[in-house]
Length: 384
Ligand SMILES: Cc1ncc(COP(=O)(O)O)c(C=O)c1O
Image: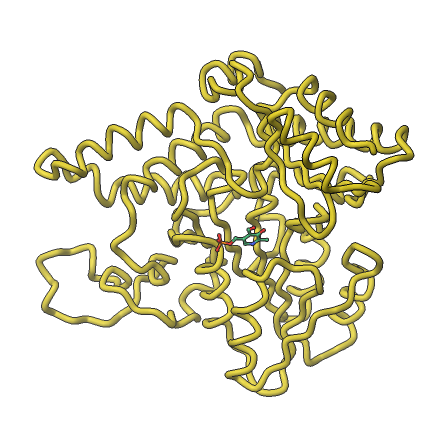
């Protein structure tokens, strides 16, 4: 179960095949594969001269994007709302889940602010407590989190990033989600740093709402993403933002003036139209690439890159790997500390290695088309 990386690079990421750069920054912004670029260019041309647009360029494009996002996570397309970014999905969760005075929204320190501020604001408005559990060292304390879920009856929502944007720590969302489901606690997941390098099947992982921008690891344009809402929950939740396409009757353009406020029975009730048809067409192509290669094969490749980084760190006293060593505790984000992080970053820049510095670490974020040879070259530049 693998794919031909050289052929993939030539076909979808020709700049990488030509060695223009070593791009290890998928935790910031993903590159766009050739197939999606072509789709975006063709759609963009038509958009500029809209008499060339056909009915198939509008709502069927969005349905294709929903269908493919759904397939990626083992969901029914009814559960997918298209959104413009992760924050929008987190806001949906924070605003529509039922919790109130005295309830606790549980999370941990170290979260990216996109998964903090919406909860903080919504909890404050409702008289609920937004509780951030302290880290243990650099990483979340999953034991303390499980204890709070199991012992504190005030916990009503657990809101976590599947994978940390900076340390690369991965929560065991199946275990946490199962504990939440058993207790009637809502489980909301920010999946942007996990989905792509990791596989997910929401049929076996109890999640109530999942927010995911597609601009990073799903190699899609800016301004596109999706939110999954568990099917049994959708009709219990009332959208906080109301668009003209969120109603059950809104697909019928002969009924605009009926003003029937009955919500769509699927997750479309959370969408705020008009969306960017051009770039959602691009997202559908990019997710299509993942589906074609096989999410399992992609995950296996990213894991093998991580394994190599762990082995390197083990053999190199001058660097410390902050990311957990165990494969089931990491995804694609690899965080390293060394004596002089700024100097290491300069060495990487000089070698045209695109990376980030986050929370005092060099963050490397290689993906499914990066090679072991690229990784080896990059790792050698870290010590010092
Ligand atoms: C965990 C996490 N959530 C969300 C985001 C980005 O949010 P948005 O897609 O709303 O820009 C990032 C980006 O770094 C992130 O790391």
